[in-house]
Length: 485
Image (cartoon, rainbow, N blue to C red; front, top):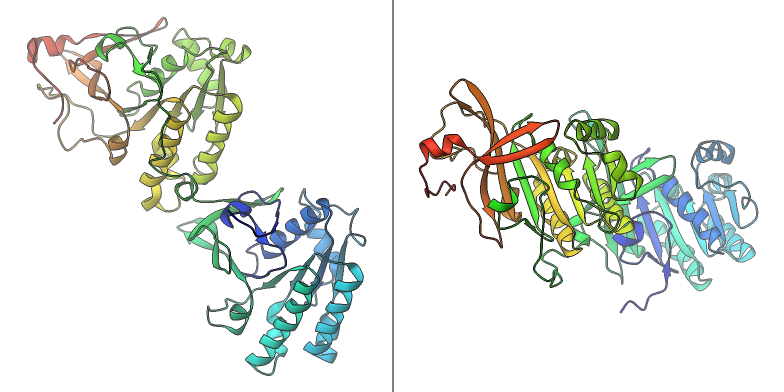
């Protein structure tokens, strides 16, 4: 059990990465290039600390006037002019540093900490202090004297610097923690990442975590697979099934989808993946609500598409049986999107989710090597919460004009994520005589017996129905197993 007293940051995800928050009375370096968000992070933490009854001393060793700082901070929602000059004091030690040196800066800050009864000191401009030091020993002495007095007074210290300090630098050896902020260019896209390079006496989630800056300030999104235990115990639920919502399918999959299972629908664009998901959600109720979590269809288009299939999404929304969420895959962060999905599930007690699609969710990841881990973690967590999931995956090269007994060639295998789902359906176009048909092949059903015979998909304004495919009757023969191996 953590016995350390912690300083709550008020910054989304920050305390999670630090496994509880900053240690009260400790000292930290926050380093990063100009524009990385160091000052915003420290200011956001400072204003939250004031709201919690603390007192903050914000000192700068920079020539920039405080009015300029206030001008930029005023665009952020956490900024409040009220406590400025009262419980949060801003002072400049730039002239003292230039005229009198480091020793006098230490004396100035020690006096102000005592006078203001500060419980948090933010010192911006550590690089300037380093440049004024005659030797590394002077830098160590400056930090040591300052943090020693602050610790005695019960004051947490944040040193901000734009210098990319190495692990063996004098500054790093003196402080209790080092937090590094930065950004990487991935093609034309910029991704901001934060790392805990050192946390003395306290745990932290290792590695890089993405963050963003908007009108709220900074929000940090710890890597999903590092915060949710993988292979966590899924509560034992009584065996039960629920309808897929598609007439003719349930009888081929053992009576319906097993509760808390994950079904992946693969197929090319236009094959009917979203339509199948709409039917799945049409079975939601106010007691067991559902969520349409989409990237392609806006809420209005989703309602229109449902209406064209004889399903009234608007009516379901009106009674609290359905929610529709839409996000852009071009501007998202995969962890933020996953946390948003899980938060919606928790707050609205969701029992059915349709994700349209996992391809789009995957594209939001700045590091494609993480995608499988993230998806496995997300789907596992939804299972553990008792949610039955249906998800779409767009797969190309599934247009087969020469259908044989096997409904798909081995090279058109399911993606790796298919290994972590319970059920796998393949929907594709096939040519029968002079017309194209949509056909569903049941490739995998976990925990239920199933009939692998391909099914013809028939769409109309009354909805979707499935029936045994005539192509299978002609080419497969009765009783022939058409499952992929």
